[in-house]
Image 1: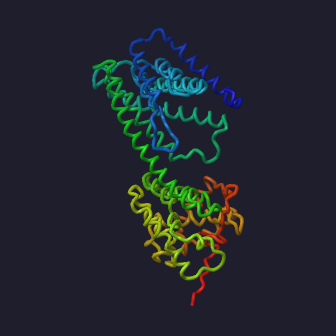
Image 2: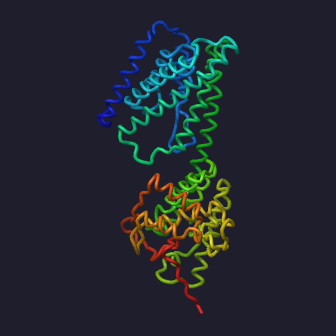
Image 3: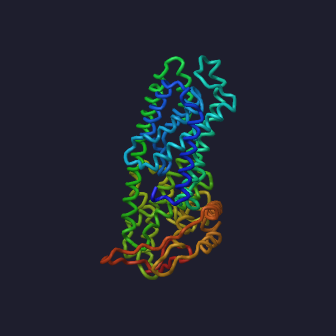
Length: 446
């Protein structure tokens, strides 16, 4: 507990004392210990092997399924006892303070779920037949919702007291996905309770086996996603070695693109695709001579043509990466303009793919709010005003408005330019070809 601020320590002590109190006052000696031990063992196995979720940096133990089964079969006190078993988790490297918090939290959530179950008309005990089982569904749903919401509230309060959550770190979309995951896994608890009358403790095994098979399959999927991310990161690093002063640009464009995509209501799969598109939108610059990208002053027609070809070069580079899917369109057309004066194909208005219209706004915004060798970063409000000015001519007004709303709600922290390592001479462009306030000058070669 040394690393925790005193409010978080006090909070942990209160939770632990509360968990102990609800268990003791519930007269645990009156419970049937045989099913209780089976459910506690099921809880411990699941708690020791958390399930990864399709949310960045998120994992969840599905052990609460055993707690909710205890709610139906044995009541609130038993659910609290089963939840407290988290203290004995065999997860490697889990510190004592985390064990105590998990045990207290799960115990209190289980007890509260049990109270909700009875308050909504649920009858504790083994359901003997279908007629006894069906009336349990609504009270069980109330118990599951109570468990999930209280769990979220306790965790959120702990993070705030520990100083780990700042503005904008918790996203409602992710919380919604996590809540739905909770509700989905909660049904395993109801399944255990329903099977108990016919197969007794074997019900736990019948539920546990498919659960772990599903977990293994999802783990394989996430491992594949990590491989995809590593591929994208390697390509981005190759692009950004051309100019140390634009390092981080691709990642920030990806972040801004996701903000827009979520604001306009894109589905989860498309948001993932546009994250990749934002990361790789400039990969075609690998095919543009560095002396052209870094040139100070006007470009010749030939040099400008090389710049205009970089989206097509990017498409050629990533065409063989199957998982990019719709990202191809964003990479190919992110320099098109709504008035048809963009490149490489001069598309206009709705002819421009939606991904490209999103990335165009994100790309220009990051360029304006980042340091460059020839100017400092512009304030966020100034950059947003420039986007408003270009709405309808250069940018899609829908995407501009969506991005402005997202920034006003979540904020945006501009980052300083990366500096080259000691001993490395890094050239810097005299202008940024993505900056709408610095138009490219082209001179005739004739």
